[in-house]
Amino acid sequence: MRRFYRGQDMARIQSVTEMMAAARRRLPGFAAEYLFGGAEDELTLAANRNDFSAIRLHSRTLIANAPPHLQTELAGSRAAYPFAIGPSGYNGMLWPQADIELARAAASRGIPFCLSTVANASLEEVRRAVPQADLWFQLYPLRDSALNDSLLQRARDAGVSTLVITSDALVVGNREWDRRNFIRPRQLTLANKLSVLLHPRWLWRVMVPHGLPLMGNLSPYLPAPERTALGSMDFIARQLDTQLDWDKVARLRRQWPGQMVLKGVLNSADVLRAAACGLDAVVISNHGGRQLDGAPSSVAALAMVAPAVKGRIRLLLDSGIRRGADIVKARALGADGVLLARATLAGVAAGGADGAGRVVDILAEETARCLQLMGHSDVRQLRREDLILPEWMCDGREFIS
Ligand SMILES: Cc1cc2nc3c(=O)[nH]c(=O)nc-3n(C[C@H](O)[C@H](O)[C@H](O)COP(=O)(O)O)c2cc1C
Image (cartoon, rainbow, N blue to C red; front, side, top):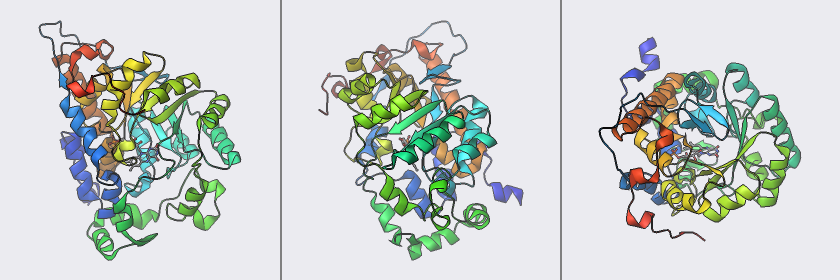
């Protein structure tokens, strides 16, 4: 019974791709599409993978093969590996208490975990459940500044080290599957209801015992009937600050005493502006291809941005990380490290904290092996010269003005 309940043995899963397949099997159609889908024609979603594949590793040989050193500093946090678990909303649809499971997986491996504004567990719950977590908080700034003040105060009280402001989702991307999966807001199509019935393990584990997940961080600001993931949709649509601009980011910078990171930047002019605002780091990101379809891959953006900003601000990257080699490439291009999202989300959807932890272990092992095969013993040794880039990626042109 327990085996049926838990499903596949996570230790048998060998790669992130395999974990993603396990998650797809476990989730009903609408939840799998929510996790894996991108915006419109998914051009950017595909580019995130294709552009990593287009970069080759230029290895050296016969260099002393010391045990690999992967420890890194990510936006002021010490991390055992050059990656952290990045923010994602509505994780409770994938696994009960998925936010807490992800925080547990991250803390047990010595990497930070970033909780989303639209997480199902609250800052307070995550801190209580995982006191040792290096907790980051991702803020979608809200129109009502009193609510932002309250969220920041709660983040401070919960011992959050790093505030991440997401800037690329002021308008929600055109995710057609999301509209197709519902007849009307909040009501699944018949095909999706059948798909739910065909995934009894998910139904049994996620829906039956817990019902619709609550919006942990936003619940204190909502009347009781609107505290669920579906019930809060109107509130979120009303409250998301679509007028977020640099002045507001600068104000948040003055308010937040810890490390502060801007996520969703693809253009060197914006990276320099973030540095001028006093931010500690930016995440070069296209939101995993879920927002502006046709945006460049984050790795191509990093290749073009890093030489232009010349170390004036720390760089992180996300979007499309599926292999340790991707992390090595991001590091060699000038990022301190990367944020994971779908990779660890697939892990949590397939097997809770065990699944997410397995993904962290797989990526750590792959990064270490890749580093050694390249003739390095420390991620800090990686340089652009360790890569062979396609010509279009290194011609120095800024592709967005
Ligand atoms: C299901 C899902 C939910 C997400 N929710 C958020 C969110 O609440 N806040 C945020 O800043 N980014 C969110 N993102 C974007 C991720 O933080 C990250 O930028 C992106 O997923 C990276 O691409 P990858 O998952 O392909 O690696 C979400 C991504 C996914 C897949």
